[in-house]
Length: 527
Image (cartoon, rainbow, N blue to C red; front, top):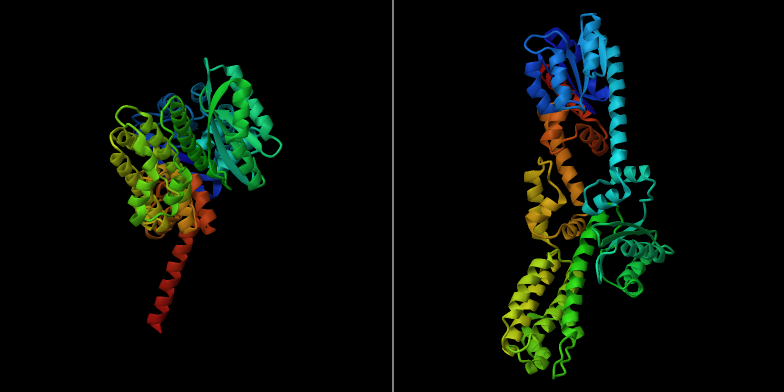
């Protein structure tokens, strides 16, 4: 809905225009009026109307002066000049200032609506043209992965760009491509083309470059098995073939399968975390391979990771000492080999824990702290103590997973109830408050409550709006701002979608119900 403001020194003119038009029905919001340009300026800055209707002859600051200021400071605002003086020089001045229309007083409601509709259509056309010029396929895909665009807007933009976006399943894979000499743009582009070619038989790949060497691929398809198969190939067979063919090193990250466009963002976050872990693991293995040790150390990693999943604290110490017996041969002070060995085991344990226990902990900070602890190890006893502490930390994730995250869900709901009127409230902000990753919070909240976090936030906001419509005389656009929506038109559409009525219809229904109850009470008193 477009916001409209009236500036006229005659109060009867302002009241007549305000009352003779059913603004909501015609698709507009009447956001205020003023008696002259000087009084109007701060209101214009506050409410940012889309259309300004102003008289010419006014005290203090006339309409032409006001128009000149508005056109300079807010060039997208449309101005309609209204005057009772049928003089050509006023029209000339108005046209020179770039106003949208010039009309004579008195003006009928139908004439005013016709002018407003024409100006509104021009605004829509300009916005659509600006949007089509600014959005590109790469920008759309980047916004999807960054969580910066809603589902309906993404579908609309994809349609304008002739991009096939809708699908049953989505997943994200990220590739960090390291050329041996320097980043060759031709080589990077060739890798992208070859990757898309190999994926094409089973899934469609929408890709973009996040940076000069970082490629992001959104895989979409009609079956979960096809996407899972291709994701596995990207991190295995296809990656190896690309490395050999182009002489590069590639670190990959794989995100989870998602069924909604909104889930692309969560899959991307997981892919980035997975890529970080993979890169650390590969670098650590490369370092390990450089060491030539005189002892043959064999660690049963499968046994260690299996105990991580099903082990109990009472058996932890004895299990660790038996598992680590081979490490007694190491000279911890003379060689860093033990550091890289434990570091590699730690990275693998973190990966398994995140997959098994559905944790949303950001690994980068925790791994950095653990690496510092590994560097302090000077004896075999220190090594055993470190492994026991590692189990303890990862089992904490297991415990949190088993109690269904009841405390986290309660924290989220309390925070949403206290911050719902903040238009900046988002999944990322809420996740930061409860200290888990956005992608994991989204999964946990959906699993535990049966609705997405966005759906819950919308439910709370619309519920508060219904309460305000019943208990206050605030205008619809004011209530929209109060419950966290800075776009009254979007709020009105969302309200109708949730309740089946527009805000005005809902308020009128409440007034009718109240009137009916009063009539019933009056009948009871006279009976």
